[in-house]
Image (spheres, rainbow, N blue to C red):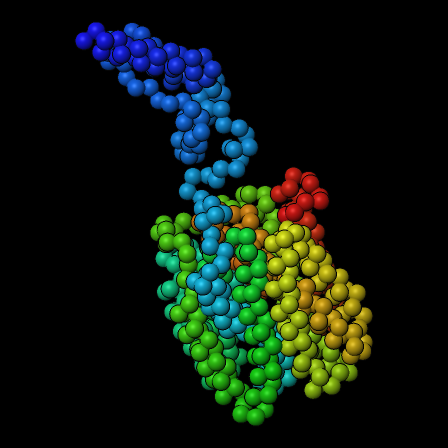
Length: 495
Protein backbone atom coordinates (compact mmCIF):
# COMPACT_ATOMS: atom_id res chain seq x y z
CA UNK A 1 0.00 0.00 0.00
CA UNK A 2 2.82 2.40 0.87
CA UNK A 3 4.50 1.68 -2.40
CA UNK A 4 1.22 2.26 -4.21
CA UNK A 5 0.59 5.53 -2.35
CA UNK A 6 4.07 6.72 -3.14
CA UNK A 7 3.52 5.98 -6.80
CA UNK A 8 0.26 7.89 -6.65
CA UNK A 9 1.70 10.91 -4.86
CA UNK A 10 4.63 11.25 -7.20
CA UNK A 11 2.74 11.81 -10.47
CA UNK A 12 0.19 14.00 -8.64
CA UNK A 13 2.79 16.49 -7.46
CA UNK A 14 4.68 16.17 -10.75
CA UNK A 15 1.51 17.22 -12.51
CA UNK A 16 1.08 20.17 -10.19
CA UNK A 17 4.70 21.13 -10.65
CA UNK A 18 4.43 20.95 -14.41
CA UNK A 19 1.26 23.04 -14.32
CA UNK A 20 2.93 25.54 -12.00
CA UNK A 21 5.95 25.83 -14.27
CA UNK A 22 3.78 26.32 -17.35
CA UNK A 23 1.68 28.81 -15.43
CA UNK A 24 4.74 30.93 -14.83
CA UNK A 25 5.40 31.07 -18.58
CA UNK A 26 1.79 31.56 -19.67
CA UNK A 27 -0.37 34.66 -19.42
CA UNK A 28 -3.59 32.62 -19.35
CA UNK A 29 -5.43 33.36 -16.10
CA UNK A 30 -7.33 30.08 -16.27
CA UNK A 31 -4.20 28.09 -15.37
CA UNK A 32 -3.61 30.22 -12.34
CA UNK A 33 -7.16 29.49 -11.20
CA UNK A 34 -6.61 25.76 -11.65
CA UNK A 35 -3.42 25.85 -9.56
CA UNK A 36 -5.19 27.74 -6.78
CA UNK A 37 -8.05 25.25 -6.71
CA UNK A 38 -5.57 22.37 -6.42
CA UNK A 39 -3.68 23.88 -3.46
CA UNK A 40 -6.77 24.78 -1.45
CA UNK A 41 -9.58 22.38 -2.16
CA UNK A 42 -8.29 19.00 -3.34
CA UNK A 43 -6.48 16.29 -1.37
CA UNK A 44 -3.40 14.78 -2.95
CA UNK A 45 -5.19 11.64 -4.10
CA UNK A 46 -7.88 13.55 -5.99
CA UNK A 47 -5.92 16.09 -7.97
CA UNK A 48 -7.92 16.79 -11.18
CA UNK A 49 -6.29 16.26 -14.55
CA UNK A 50 -5.10 19.62 -15.84
CA UNK A 51 -5.24 20.47 -19.53
CA UNK A 52 -2.17 20.01 -21.68
CA UNK A 53 -1.10 23.57 -22.36
CA UNK A 54 1.13 22.64 -25.30
CA UNK A 55 -1.92 21.38 -27.17
CA UNK A 56 -3.83 24.50 -26.14
CA UNK A 57 -1.16 26.69 -27.75
CA UNK A 58 -1.32 24.74 -30.98
CA UNK A 59 -5.12 24.90 -31.10
CA UNK A 60 -6.55 27.84 -33.02
CA UNK A 61 -9.90 28.78 -31.62
CA UNK A 62 -12.73 29.66 -33.92
CA UNK A 63 -13.58 33.36 -34.14
CA UNK A 64 -16.73 32.79 -32.07
CA UNK A 65 -14.69 31.30 -29.20
CA UNK A 66 -12.15 34.09 -28.88
CA UNK A 67 -12.74 36.73 -26.22
CA UNK A 68 -10.62 39.76 -27.07
CA UNK A 69 -9.82 41.57 -23.82
CA UNK A 70 -6.67 43.68 -23.76
CA UNK A 71 -6.91 44.26 -20.02
CA UNK A 72 -7.07 40.60 -18.99
CA UNK A 73 -4.85 39.33 -21.85
CA UNK A 74 -7.15 36.36 -22.39
CA UNK A 75 -5.75 35.65 -25.85
CA UNK A 76 -2.42 36.19 -27.52
CA UNK A 77 -3.80 35.97 -31.04
CA UNK A 78 -1.82 38.24 -33.37
CA UNK A 79 -3.36 41.10 -35.32
CA UNK A 80 -2.62 39.25 -38.54
CA UNK A 81 -4.67 36.26 -37.43
CA UNK A 82 -7.55 38.52 -36.44
CA UNK A 83 -7.61 40.10 -39.87
CA UNK A 84 -7.28 36.85 -41.81
CA UNK A 85 -10.05 35.02 -39.98
CA UNK A 86 -13.39 35.47 -41.78
CA UNK A 87 -16.28 36.86 -39.73
CA UNK A 88 -18.58 34.21 -38.25
CA UNK A 89 -20.87 32.65 -40.84
CA UNK A 90 -19.22 34.19 -43.90
CA UNK A 91 -18.11 31.51 -46.40
CA UNK A 92 -14.36 31.06 -46.64
CA UNK A 93 -12.68 31.34 -50.08
CA UNK A 94 -11.84 27.65 -49.77
CA UNK A 95 -15.57 26.84 -49.68
CA UNK A 96 -16.03 27.87 -53.33
CA UNK A 97 -15.54 25.01 -55.82
CA UNK A 98 -14.02 27.38 -58.46
CA UNK A 99 -14.61 24.69 -61.07
CA UNK A 100 -15.97 21.21 -61.62
CA UNK A 101 -18.79 19.86 -63.79
CA UNK A 102 -21.62 21.30 -61.72
CA UNK A 103 -20.07 24.77 -61.44
CA UNK A 104 -19.30 25.05 -65.16
CA UNK A 105 -22.75 23.72 -66.09
CA UNK A 106 -24.18 26.69 -64.18
CA UNK A 107 -21.93 28.97 -66.26
CA UNK A 108 -23.26 27.36 -69.46
CA UNK A 109 -26.84 27.84 -68.27
CA UNK A 110 -26.02 31.42 -67.34
CA UNK A 111 -24.60 31.94 -70.84
CA UNK A 112 -27.97 31.01 -72.35
CA UNK A 113 -29.76 33.19 -69.82
CA UNK A 114 -27.79 36.26 -70.89
CA UNK A 115 -28.04 35.32 -74.56
CA UNK A 116 -31.83 35.54 -74.30
CA UNK A 117 -32.06 38.56 -71.97
CA UNK A 118 -29.16 40.99 -72.15
CA UNK A 119 -28.44 39.79 -75.69
CA UNK A 120 -31.95 40.82 -76.65
CA UNK A 121 -31.48 44.19 -74.94
CA UNK A 122 -28.22 44.68 -76.86
CA UNK A 123 -30.22 44.29 -80.09
CA UNK A 124 -32.74 47.03 -79.28
CA UNK A 125 -30.92 49.40 -81.59
CA UNK A 126 -32.43 47.56 -84.55
CA UNK A 127 -35.92 48.31 -83.20
CA UNK A 128 -35.08 51.98 -82.65
CA UNK A 129 -34.18 52.16 -86.33
CA UNK A 130 -37.14 50.09 -87.57
CA UNK A 131 -39.78 51.84 -85.46
CA UNK A 132 -38.38 55.28 -86.26
CA UNK A 133 -38.36 54.69 -90.03
CA UNK A 134 -41.27 52.24 -90.50
CA UNK A 135 -43.81 51.22 -87.89
CA UNK A 136 -43.83 54.43 -85.79
CA UNK A 137 -42.52 56.93 -88.32
CA UNK A 138 -45.04 59.56 -87.17
CA UNK A 139 -43.44 59.68 -83.70
CA UNK A 140 -40.34 61.63 -82.72
CA UNK A 141 -37.03 59.79 -82.03
CA UNK A 142 -37.32 60.72 -78.36
CA UNK A 143 -40.81 59.20 -78.09
CA UNK A 144 -39.78 56.00 -79.88
CA UNK A 145 -36.73 55.72 -77.62
CA UNK A 146 -39.01 55.23 -74.59
CA UNK A 147 -39.82 51.69 -75.79
CA UNK A 148 -36.22 50.50 -75.84
CA UNK A 149 -35.37 52.56 -72.74
CA UNK A 150 -38.17 50.91 -70.77
CA UNK A 151 -36.77 47.54 -71.82
CA UNK A 152 -33.40 48.41 -70.29
CA UNK A 153 -35.03 50.05 -67.24
CA UNK A 154 -37.23 47.10 -66.27
CA UNK A 155 -34.39 44.72 -67.05
CA UNK A 156 -32.44 46.28 -64.16
CA UNK A 157 -34.96 48.03 -61.89
CA UNK A 158 -36.44 44.87 -60.40
CA UNK A 159 -33.02 43.91 -59.06
CA UNK A 160 -33.59 44.58 -55.33
CA UNK A 161 -36.86 42.66 -55.21
CA UNK A 162 -35.64 39.81 -57.39
CA UNK A 163 -32.37 39.72 -55.45
CA UNK A 164 -34.24 39.45 -52.14
CA UNK A 165 -36.40 36.64 -53.54
CA UNK A 166 -33.27 34.89 -54.82
CA UNK A 167 -31.59 35.05 -51.40
CA UNK A 168 -34.75 33.71 -49.73
CA UNK A 169 -35.90 31.05 -52.19
CA UNK A 170 -33.20 30.43 -54.79
CA UNK A 171 -33.41 30.76 -58.59
CA UNK A 172 -35.85 28.00 -59.57
CA UNK A 173 -39.20 29.83 -59.42
CA UNK A 174 -37.65 33.03 -60.74
CA UNK A 175 -36.38 31.21 -63.82
CA UNK A 176 -39.74 29.56 -64.55
CA UNK A 177 -41.85 32.71 -64.16
CA UNK A 178 -39.28 34.90 -65.90
CA UNK A 179 -39.04 32.56 -68.89
CA UNK A 180 -42.83 32.64 -69.34
CA UNK A 181 -43.13 36.43 -69.10
CA UNK A 182 -40.20 37.08 -71.44
CA UNK A 183 -41.52 34.79 -74.20
CA UNK A 184 -45.14 35.88 -73.67
CA UNK A 185 -44.18 39.56 -73.96
CA UNK A 186 -42.42 38.96 -77.28
CA UNK A 187 -45.37 36.97 -78.63
CA UNK A 188 -47.67 39.87 -77.73
CA UNK A 189 -45.25 42.27 -79.42
CA UNK A 190 -45.72 40.31 -82.63
CA UNK A 191 -49.43 41.18 -82.47
CA UNK A 192 -48.89 44.86 -81.69
CA UNK A 193 -49.46 47.67 -84.16
CA UNK A 194 -49.96 50.68 -81.87
CA UNK A 195 -47.43 52.61 -79.79
CA UNK A 196 -49.05 51.79 -76.43
CA UNK A 197 -49.22 48.08 -77.32
CA UNK A 198 -45.52 47.97 -78.08
CA UNK A 199 -44.83 49.90 -74.88
CA UNK A 200 -46.73 47.36 -72.73
CA UNK A 201 -45.58 44.16 -74.45
CA UNK A 202 -42.00 44.89 -75.47
CA UNK A 203 -41.26 47.72 -73.03
CA UNK A 204 -42.69 46.20 -69.83
CA UNK A 205 -43.83 42.55 -69.92
CA UNK A 206 -40.86 41.04 -71.75
CA UNK A 207 -38.11 42.86 -69.79
CA UNK A 208 -39.74 42.10 -66.41
CA UNK A 209 -39.42 38.40 -67.23
CA UNK A 210 -35.95 38.90 -68.67
CA UNK A 211 -34.92 40.59 -65.43
CA UNK A 212 -35.86 37.50 -63.38
CA UNK A 213 -33.82 35.28 -65.68
CA UNK A 214 -30.86 37.68 -65.78
CA UNK A 215 -30.45 38.07 -62.00
CA UNK A 216 -30.98 34.37 -61.36
CA UNK A 217 -28.08 33.56 -63.66
CA UNK A 218 -25.63 36.21 -62.47
CA UNK A 219 -26.29 35.61 -58.76
CA UNK A 220 -26.06 31.84 -59.14
CA UNK A 221 -22.70 31.93 -60.95
CA UNK A 222 -21.21 34.16 -58.23
CA UNK A 223 -21.90 31.53 -55.53
CA UNK A 224 -19.76 28.91 -57.32
CA UNK A 225 -16.57 30.89 -57.95
CA UNK A 226 -14.13 33.00 -55.94
CA UNK A 227 -10.66 33.07 -57.52
CA UNK A 228 -12.08 32.67 -61.04
CA UNK A 229 -15.19 34.76 -60.41
CA UNK A 230 -14.57 37.52 -62.96
CA UNK A 231 -13.57 34.97 -65.59
CA UNK A 232 -16.71 32.86 -65.00
CA UNK A 233 -18.90 35.96 -65.09
CA UNK A 234 -17.16 37.05 -68.27
CA UNK A 235 -18.03 33.77 -69.99
CA UNK A 236 -21.60 34.10 -68.75
CA UNK A 237 -21.84 37.70 -69.98
CA UNK A 238 -20.43 36.68 -73.37
CA UNK A 239 -23.84 35.18 -74.03
CA UNK A 240 -25.28 38.69 -74.19
CA UNK A 241 -22.71 39.64 -76.82
CA UNK A 242 -23.54 36.61 -78.93
CA UNK A 243 -27.21 37.52 -78.66
CA UNK A 244 -26.32 41.05 -79.71
CA UNK A 245 -24.75 39.61 -82.86
CA UNK A 246 -27.42 37.09 -83.81
CA UNK A 247 -30.63 38.95 -83.04
CA UNK A 248 -29.93 42.14 -85.06
CA UNK A 249 -28.86 40.15 -88.14
CA UNK A 250 -31.75 37.74 -87.69
CA UNK A 251 -34.37 40.49 -87.36
CA UNK A 252 -32.88 42.59 -90.17
CA UNK A 253 -33.20 39.71 -92.63
CA UNK A 254 -36.46 38.19 -91.37
CA UNK A 255 -38.56 41.38 -91.21
CA UNK A 256 -38.36 42.06 -94.98
CA UNK A 257 -38.83 38.37 -95.82
CA UNK A 258 -41.63 37.19 -93.49
CA UNK A 259 -42.80 40.43 -91.89
CA UNK A 260 -42.43 41.94 -88.43
CA UNK A 261 -45.00 39.67 -86.64
CA UNK A 262 -43.43 36.37 -87.69
CA UNK A 263 -39.92 37.69 -87.21
CA UNK A 264 -40.79 38.42 -83.57
CA UNK A 265 -42.32 34.95 -83.16
CA UNK A 266 -39.21 33.30 -84.59
CA UNK A 267 -37.06 35.18 -82.08
CA UNK A 268 -39.42 34.21 -79.25
CA UNK A 269 -39.21 30.50 -80.14
CA UNK A 270 -35.39 30.68 -80.25
CA UNK A 271 -35.40 32.33 -76.82
CA UNK A 272 -37.79 29.68 -75.48
CA UNK A 273 -35.47 26.84 -76.55
CA UNK A 274 -32.46 28.49 -74.87
CA UNK A 275 -34.41 29.11 -71.67
CA UNK A 276 -35.33 25.42 -71.43
CA UNK A 277 -31.60 24.63 -71.22
CA UNK A 278 -31.12 27.42 -68.69
CA UNK A 279 -33.88 26.12 -66.42
CA UNK A 280 -32.26 22.68 -66.38
CA UNK A 281 -28.72 23.83 -65.53
CA UNK A 282 -28.79 27.02 -63.43
CA UNK A 283 -28.78 26.51 -59.66
CA UNK A 284 -27.32 28.26 -56.63
CA UNK A 285 -24.66 26.61 -54.44
CA UNK A 286 -25.76 28.18 -51.16
CA UNK A 287 -29.05 27.08 -49.57
CA UNK A 288 -31.88 29.64 -49.47
CA UNK A 289 -31.98 31.87 -46.39
CA UNK A 290 -35.56 33.14 -45.92
CA UNK A 291 -35.86 36.56 -44.34
CA UNK A 292 -38.60 39.19 -44.17
CA UNK A 293 -38.73 41.90 -46.81
CA UNK A 294 -37.37 45.13 -45.35
CA UNK A 295 -36.80 48.12 -47.67
CA UNK A 296 -33.98 49.42 -45.46
CA UNK A 297 -31.95 46.31 -46.34
CA UNK A 298 -31.53 47.73 -49.84
CA UNK A 299 -30.68 51.22 -48.63
CA UNK A 300 -28.26 50.24 -45.86
CA UNK A 301 -25.36 49.20 -48.17
CA UNK A 302 -25.37 52.70 -49.69
CA UNK A 303 -24.09 54.04 -46.35
CA UNK A 304 -20.82 52.19 -47.01
CA UNK A 305 -18.42 54.53 -48.82
CA UNK A 306 -17.09 51.94 -51.26
CA UNK A 307 -20.49 50.53 -52.17
CA UNK A 308 -22.09 53.98 -52.49
CA UNK A 309 -19.34 55.28 -54.77
CA UNK A 310 -19.44 52.09 -56.86
CA UNK A 311 -23.18 52.57 -57.31
CA UNK A 312 -22.72 56.21 -58.36
CA UNK A 313 -19.98 55.40 -60.88
CA UNK A 314 -22.07 52.57 -62.35
CA UNK A 315 -25.06 54.92 -62.63
CA UNK A 316 -23.09 57.52 -64.60
CA UNK A 317 -21.50 54.96 -66.90
CA UNK A 318 -24.77 53.18 -67.65
CA UNK A 319 -26.39 56.57 -68.29
CA UNK A 320 -24.26 56.93 -71.42
CA UNK A 321 -23.37 53.30 -72.13
CA UNK A 322 -26.32 52.22 -74.31
CA UNK A 323 -26.56 55.38 -76.42
CA UNK A 324 -24.01 54.13 -79.01
CA UNK A 325 -25.83 50.77 -79.15
CA UNK A 326 -29.03 52.49 -80.25
CA UNK A 327 -27.61 55.20 -82.49
CA UNK A 328 -24.43 53.85 -84.10
CA UNK A 329 -26.32 52.55 -87.16
CA UNK A 330 -28.40 55.71 -87.55
CA UNK A 331 -25.36 57.96 -87.24
CA UNK A 332 -23.53 55.86 -89.83
CA UNK A 333 -26.45 56.28 -92.25
CA UNK A 334 -26.41 60.05 -91.70
CA UNK A 335 -22.69 60.09 -92.61
CA UNK A 336 -23.37 58.44 -95.96
CA UNK A 337 -22.79 54.77 -95.14
CA UNK A 338 -24.91 52.40 -97.23
CA UNK A 339 -27.83 50.71 -95.50
CA UNK A 340 -26.38 47.29 -96.31
CA UNK A 341 -23.25 48.10 -94.31
CA UNK A 342 -24.92 50.22 -91.62
CA UNK A 343 -27.14 47.33 -90.54
CA UNK A 344 -24.01 45.44 -89.48
CA UNK A 345 -22.63 48.16 -87.19
CA UNK A 346 -24.50 46.84 -84.15
CA UNK A 347 -23.52 43.19 -84.78
CA UNK A 348 -19.89 44.29 -85.24
CA UNK A 349 -20.04 46.19 -81.94
CA UNK A 350 -21.51 43.17 -80.15
CA UNK A 351 -19.02 40.78 -81.77
CA UNK A 352 -16.15 42.79 -80.31
CA UNK A 353 -17.85 42.75 -76.91
CA UNK A 354 -17.61 38.93 -76.85
CA UNK A 355 -13.87 39.37 -76.31
CA UNK A 356 -14.47 42.40 -74.09
CA UNK A 357 -16.57 40.34 -71.71
CA UNK A 358 -14.23 37.36 -71.42
CA UNK A 359 -10.59 38.49 -71.73
CA UNK A 360 -10.73 41.45 -69.27
CA UNK A 361 -12.40 39.18 -66.69
CA UNK A 362 -9.54 36.69 -66.93
CA UNK A 363 -6.96 39.48 -66.66
CA UNK A 364 -8.92 41.11 -63.83
CA UNK A 365 -8.60 37.99 -61.68
CA UNK A 366 -4.82 38.28 -62.12
CA UNK A 367 -4.09 42.01 -61.81
CA UNK A 368 -7.20 43.40 -60.11
CA UNK A 369 -10.82 43.78 -61.20
CA UNK A 370 -11.07 47.48 -60.40
CA UNK A 371 -7.82 48.13 -62.29
CA UNK A 372 -9.11 46.45 -65.46
CA UNK A 373 -12.59 48.00 -65.22
CA UNK A 374 -11.21 51.52 -64.86
CA UNK A 375 -8.95 51.02 -67.88
CA UNK A 376 -11.76 49.71 -70.07
CA UNK A 377 -14.21 52.44 -69.03
CA UNK A 378 -11.64 55.14 -69.74
CA UNK A 379 -11.08 53.58 -73.18
CA UNK A 380 -14.84 53.58 -73.89
CA UNK A 381 -15.32 57.23 -72.97
CA UNK A 382 -12.27 58.46 -74.83
CA UNK A 383 -13.03 56.72 -78.13
CA UNK A 384 -16.56 58.16 -78.16
CA UNK A 385 -15.13 61.68 -77.92
CA UNK A 386 -12.00 61.14 -79.99
CA UNK A 387 -13.24 58.72 -82.67
CA UNK A 388 -17.04 58.52 -82.98
CA UNK A 389 -17.75 62.24 -82.54
CA UNK A 390 -15.47 63.53 -85.35
CA UNK A 391 -16.04 60.52 -87.66
CA UNK A 392 -17.38 61.38 -91.14
CA UNK A 393 -16.28 58.31 -93.12
CA UNK A 394 -17.00 54.58 -92.92
CA UNK A 395 -13.60 53.43 -91.63
CA UNK A 396 -13.54 55.39 -88.34
CA UNK A 397 -17.13 54.35 -87.56
CA UNK A 398 -16.25 50.67 -88.03
CA UNK A 399 -13.11 51.04 -85.90
CA UNK A 400 -15.18 52.78 -83.24
CA UNK A 401 -17.73 49.95 -83.22
CA UNK A 402 -14.97 47.39 -82.64
CA UNK A 403 -13.15 49.31 -79.89
CA UNK A 404 -16.31 50.44 -78.10
CA UNK A 405 -17.73 46.93 -78.16
CA UNK A 406 -14.58 45.63 -76.49
CA UNK A 407 -14.39 48.38 -73.84
CA UNK A 408 -18.08 48.55 -72.92
CA UNK A 409 -18.37 44.78 -72.80
CA UNK A 410 -15.76 44.62 -70.07
CA UNK A 411 -17.70 46.97 -67.80
CA UNK A 412 -20.99 45.11 -68.16
CA UNK A 413 -19.42 41.77 -67.24
CA UNK A 414 -17.30 43.15 -64.37
CA UNK A 415 -20.03 44.96 -62.39
CA UNK A 416 -21.26 41.84 -60.51
CA UNK A 417 -17.65 40.90 -59.68
CA UNK A 418 -16.99 44.41 -58.33
CA UNK A 419 -20.14 44.27 -56.21
CA UNK A 420 -19.12 40.88 -54.83
CA UNK A 421 -15.66 42.25 -54.00
CA UNK A 422 -17.12 44.85 -51.61
CA UNK A 423 -19.99 42.70 -50.25
CA UNK A 424 -20.87 39.76 -48.05
CA UNK A 425 -21.53 36.90 -50.49
CA UNK A 426 -24.64 35.90 -48.48
CA UNK A 427 -26.23 39.21 -49.51
CA UNK A 428 -25.10 39.12 -53.14
CA UNK A 429 -28.66 39.06 -54.49
CA UNK A 430 -29.77 42.14 -52.60
CA UNK A 431 -26.58 44.12 -53.21
CA UNK A 432 -26.31 43.32 -56.92
CA UNK A 433 -29.97 44.17 -57.29
CA UNK A 434 -29.50 47.50 -55.52
CA UNK A 435 -26.69 48.54 -57.86
CA UNK A 436 -28.60 47.56 -60.99
CA UNK A 437 -31.78 49.27 -59.75
CA UNK A 438 -29.78 52.48 -59.46
CA UNK A 439 -28.22 52.12 -62.92
CA UNK A 440 -31.66 51.38 -64.39
CA UNK A 441 -32.60 55.02 -63.80
CA UNK A 442 -29.68 56.11 -65.96
CA UNK A 443 -30.51 53.52 -68.62
CA UNK A 444 -34.14 54.72 -68.61
CA UNK A 445 -33.30 58.37 -69.20
CA UNK A 446 -30.19 58.03 -71.38
CA UNK A 447 -31.77 57.20 -74.74
CA UNK A 448 -34.77 59.60 -74.54
CA UNK A 449 -32.40 62.44 -73.60
CA UNK A 450 -30.16 61.40 -76.48
CA UNK A 451 -33.19 61.49 -78.79
CA UNK A 452 -34.08 64.98 -77.53
CA UNK A 453 -30.49 66.11 -78.14
CA UNK A 454 -30.75 64.74 -81.65
CA UNK A 455 -33.80 66.95 -82.28
CA UNK A 456 -32.07 69.90 -80.61
CA UNK A 457 -29.06 69.46 -82.88
CA UNK A 458 -31.34 69.38 -85.95
CA UNK A 459 -30.56 65.77 -86.82
CA UNK A 460 -26.85 66.00 -86.09
CA UNK A 461 -25.22 63.64 -83.57
CA UNK A 462 -22.63 65.95 -81.99
CA UNK A 463 -24.62 66.74 -78.81
CA UNK A 464 -25.63 63.11 -78.42
CA UNK A 465 -22.07 61.83 -78.76
CA UNK A 466 -20.61 64.44 -76.40
CA UNK A 467 -23.32 63.62 -73.84
CA UNK A 468 -22.56 59.88 -73.94
CA UNK A 469 -18.78 60.26 -73.80
CA UNK A 470 -18.88 62.84 -71.02
CA UNK A 471 -21.04 60.62 -68.79
CA UNK A 472 -18.78 57.59 -69.21
CA UNK A 473 -15.65 59.64 -68.50
CA UNK A 474 -17.30 61.14 -65.40
CA UNK A 475 -18.27 57.68 -64.17
CA UNK A 476 -14.71 56.49 -64.68
CA UNK A 477 -13.40 59.30 -62.47
CA UNK A 478 -15.79 58.24 -59.69
CA UNK A 479 -14.64 54.62 -60.16
CA UNK A 480 -11.05 55.74 -59.58
CA UNK A 481 -12.14 57.47 -56.35
CA UNK A 482 -13.92 54.26 -55.30
CA UNK A 483 -10.74 52.29 -55.76
CA UNK A 484 -8.70 54.80 -53.74
CA UNK A 485 -11.24 54.61 -50.90
CA UNK A 486 -10.95 50.82 -50.81
CA UNK A 487 -7.13 50.85 -50.91
CA UNK A 488 -6.92 53.81 -48.51
CA UNK A 489 -5.05 55.91 -51.05
CA UNK A 490 -2.63 53.25 -52.29
CA UNK A 491 -2.27 53.73 -56.05
CA UNK A 492 -0.17 50.82 -57.32
CA UNK A 493 -1.75 47.64 -55.98
CA UNK A 494 -3.88 44.75 -57.14
CA UNK A 495 -7.50 45.77 -56.64
